[in-house]
Length: 392
Ligand code: PLP
Image (cartoon, rainbow, N blue to C red):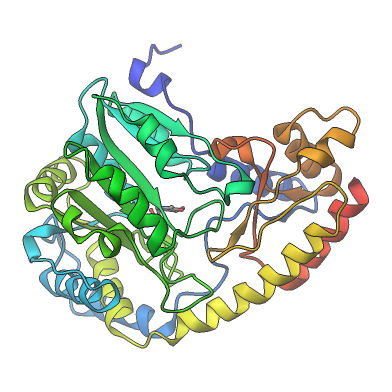
């Protein structure tokens, strides 16, 4: 067999993508599997966005673009940051990438040296720790509990910081917990970070728009404008406009850091797809009503799923603030099931015995929980919950 790099041996494939692939395989083999693992909205991309892509193709906008994105999209992104977030950026502070995932990848590659520590609150988006490892960094995980609504406290943050801390990821609303930090909580975290000028802050706002209470979204720069010179604000069109396959994310931050991230991107993918950039521009500048319609539907499903889960003996599930995930604690349920030791075994049991595919909390650094995606039809959710109840 081929001897692979130490680098690739230090990381694992994305567990959420692996579950989706496994469910697809079992389905192809004739098994009846309901997938609750999806990390993407189950709605079609809106027509006016598709039309912009078609137009881009017809207009011959099918060639390389500037690595950091076309000027008109960057302008739309700058307007979005201004209007939605009250943040001011110049074009040289914005980088468009192949999905939000590449924004984080560029950042870790551009910033980290071997041994640099990166603070990652758990439960975390599965890719943060592995991206840090790929950049020879050291993930420092802060654990949280359901009792603290999966939010880190200022005390926990301070205790995790060392001389080597270089970066912290804040993801709110959070995949997988669905909770969002409020302004006071972000103020308290910023009060700690203020004391450590070497730490760069990455706020991953990917789920900004999938929030039940409209107009309540805040990030750390809203709480602490003085952190502007060392904060990277990451967002994208994947989740808000149901555009996961188009692969467009973007980041804004200090010009020198964005320039370094652009250099990394210029030696990996070059520009994100030209056609998708035109589609993303249409998404950001066009009719926004799609987002509200989608949120209404997610909220209905959320209410149903949370109440059903809480009716199961041994399951405790928080109401979320947004996203399309719920993250119940199943420790007591596991304790009363014979032959099941942990969330990994429980998830395995559910896919084999109930035909329901979901992701164990361990994948997100928080064992004893499971992540259920509600980005599927109400009928599927009802069917899945019936099957789960029967299986346990
Ligand atoms: N950030 C978070 C928290 C996510 O959950 C995801 C997708 O699952 C991303 C970033 C990346 O999104 P994409 O690369 O599809 O734009």
